[in-house]
Amino acid sequence: MLVVCLCAEWCGVCRDYLERFDTLRARFPQVQFAWVDVEDQSDLVDPLEVDDFPTLLIARGGEPVFFGPVRPQAEALERLLRDRMAGDGIQIAALPGEVAQLVLRLRAATL
Image (cartoon, rainbow, N blue to C red; front, side):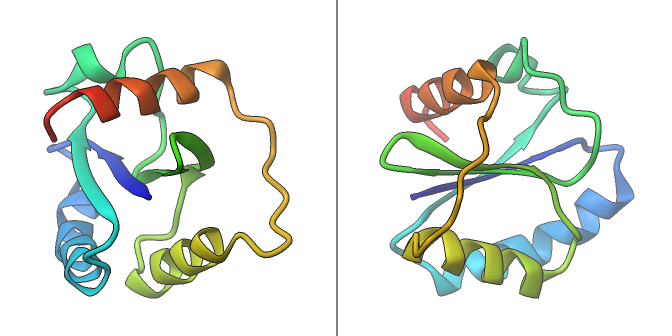
């Protein structure tokens, strides 16, 4: 699995969230975590627009299974991650094609 936080350096909420994100990174060593600044790494993110922070992208097997803003709480991310890892009965809403393309670019990049 891949869990990506799309953020911006100027966003105070994102800066505060980084510590929580890193805590979960340590608790789930089998999952690849990445912190992507949408401005500093715009060549990777474009043409996808990210308007709300933090925005998470979760992919399983190369396919996006979640994309959207989340509450900046470690518990919310952990619950979301566990649900997506289990995959039990989760309905995956249609995601824009740009999200699937971003997953491919992220997989190809050295994060």
